[in-house]
Length: 471
Ligand code: NAD
Image (cartoon, rainbow, N blue to C red; front, side):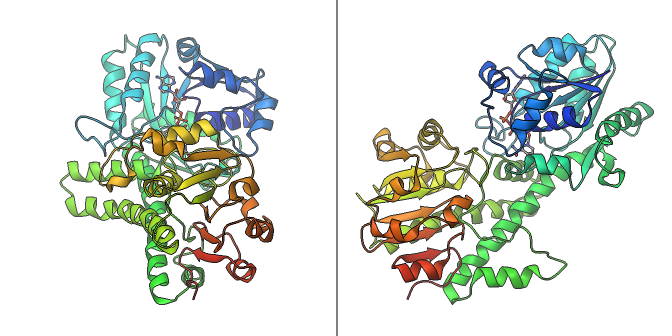
């Protein structure tokens, strides 16, 4: 029986390994992590991440061919294929701080693999890493090898949170990069055979190591760039009376452009887009490609601009001050169908409003109060940010209440900000909400989910990203 071990039981390690276990009953899959609470949660009924469809798969496979464990060294030493899916955040200090990827977790995983391995291994980069990371990993492993042979593969993950299971069941592509030596090709083939259990052959792309590593950074940069492009247009729409939904529809009908990922919003978030673009910027700078670095930097600058623009719109619409006013925040997760709040635009919007002394009442379907308070009190690394995005004073964070109902959040509020596109926000009883709010009642839709005309008929003053403004 082939044995797989995945180091890192997070948003990627958990779902990817659960799907491999489901689709490959002949493979034994162990997911290991240094975080005991995370592993305990994977072994309980309350999984550590919210992801539609994952509970059923874990229930079906756990204890049969899927195991979650803190016995990292044991499972690594027994495995034939080791996926490494540890976090690779942006460095916060030292060389490259604020841009370069922090590979500390990766390096310690690689050193541990070298320490405990007693047989040849295939080591798979599942985390998103800078191009050429495999070279560094190879050095660490071979210089500590004790006669053991390692083959390094790059197999970046393209799943999106909220649709992870769907994406894993039916991926647009699976990318495997390996060395072009006979041993490298054998390793590539072994990993391809795992995916071939359910992924059609024409969706499995084989490349060299560096192309695979760089493709993941490139894909995230292209996706984020598309969001910043449509958001940049949304500002121009508001200035001219054009409607971003009509513009995006017309633009997306061009088959060379396509309709997906053209929704204007308060900005992108999540743990990947910003970190991966910063990483790309750093790699470009290290290679002397200043103009290319500046091009990609602009994608993040427009994203920050969009979040600031939204905050400014809220404050200026509400007679230039939100001091002491209750504002309901509907949605805190960085997108719908996830409880993940990493880099969510809600953090910067809430901090901006708290900076103007607003009182916030926050409601999200999946995010806990602890998460919200932690995110709002955390210092964010200042790569190029305006001052108000920095650490909130404990006093400011006290002006936040977290509630479990949209009606409670909006009760008595002067304004509402919709920051996540949860389906629930499309079907709320806005008449009831309006009746219980201060007047004039403002609604700022950062995700373009509400029917603007209907809400205006009820009496709301509505601002929706990139849409014509209220007269
Ligand atoms: P995560 O923070 O949710 O999970 C990483 C896990 O690795 C943590 O539980 C941590 O405790 C564990 N870990 C760290 N060092 C370890 C070690 N030495 N031994 C054992 N466990 C260790 O991160 P994530 O969101 O799953 O992302 C993982 C990687 O995948 C990142 O590089 C990310 O960029 C990439 N990625 C993420 C997504 C996404 O949507 N989240 C999508 C594609 C790729």
